[in-house]
Length: 320
Image (cartoon, rainbow, N blue to C red):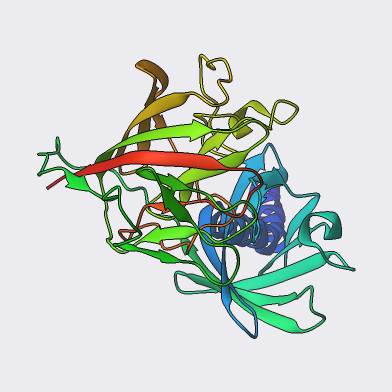
């Protein structure tokens, strides 16, 4: 009888422990599950009253601490000072110094199905809406078959290209396409997915430009960024990948890029030397035309930076 009562007492204790702790375990598991839904790379679109801005976010877990890298309306990927998941919402802050704003931009978003959406206090003082989707892996399923080369620049005029908006315009002189300096971006009319691209360029002293692949990933061209991070130097993908080895700066000399882009995997050969060898591009560069990474996009040449850069041969071979 004493043995039976003891067994009953232990059973009651065990049941009580299970009843008392199972909600806590369930809550912890739910919180962990909720947190994991926000992890990963996100292609964002910020909706200002006058236009849309592409953006990008990468949320990771470092032990028990959330970390994030962010690409805003311009510039490069940078760590965020604050990110948290609270009451089913993702909240993060982009500092005002990075945003040309009087206040820090405070983002808050929630998941509905596969879409992340929310609001942010825009730098214009108005509330902006924003949306996000998980960035695609962009894995190429097969070895590409290459099509016929396409000459994107005819050496005569701006046929096949359009300007991004008002401002100083590009010119064609002696068969060379020349950046205006603090002017327009120049966007090709055609859309491409995977391709090989050959570009010849000459960068004046203290000048800056770049070649945007699919209108989203900038391969840097410059002679003015010595003091900036290595990924901001010629041959690098701005903010993400540095050229290695980095070739000496050569103002006023013609140089070549042979670029291969398959999905996210990039190879850059500069002046016959491989400086990026089949490396993954994590996300978009600030100044991208959009954040729709799964879609084809154009080649665009940066003209909004200072100085003058000349381009001549611009030949693209698409993958079929």
